[in-house]
Image (cartoon, rainbow, N blue to C red; front, side):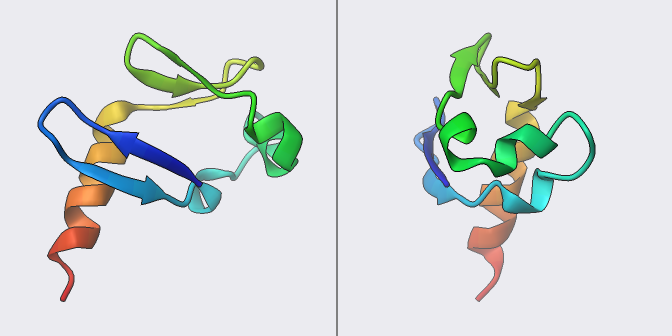
Length: 68
């Protein structure tokens, strides 16, 4: 999980587990490796090149907030 804050003020702790599918994301299942994330061009990125687009993350926050 990572706490994200976007320029529009949207903020939430996001569980990345649903996105950790496929070979490039497999190393991220290790907690120590997952913690090595950094921001590059506004995108959450890992040393192996894995990343998740900020639009995808923002949409997931907005969509989850709309669910009663």
